[in-house]
Image 1 (cartoon, rainbow, N blue to C red):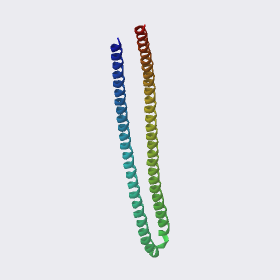
Image 2: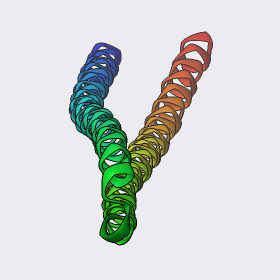
Image 3: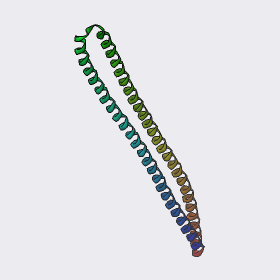
Image 4: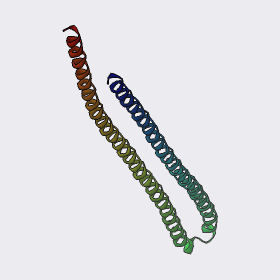
Length: 184
């Protein structure tokens, strides 16, 4: 009778060990999934950085175009100044109109460039916030799930401990009774 109870206890111990091993494996799988999510988020961040780099490159190109336009305006101004000295009468109005047009074009390009850059920066900010929120939510869900799993495991182990303790007390009681019977 004692041997069967010892065997039962050994079987329960083996089952508990197997359960703990599966729990460790499950936690390793969850860790791998979390790492994959982080890697995917890193790829998204890299893509956003590339997009920002592209916008900054376009900004630089547009600034160069703007400088070229300003240089061309200065050249035209110099040519007009020379021709105004020769034919000053009607050219004053034309020169003023060309300057206003050039400034308007220059300002329109600057505004377009600034709006484009702001738009991309806003998009990057939104994506970074979404990424942070997703990572935070994923981490919180994972932690909550692990806590629940651990609590369930503790409850089950406590039940096993109570049962094993009761069985041990029964065995000890029987052993004492057998010793008492043997002494009588």
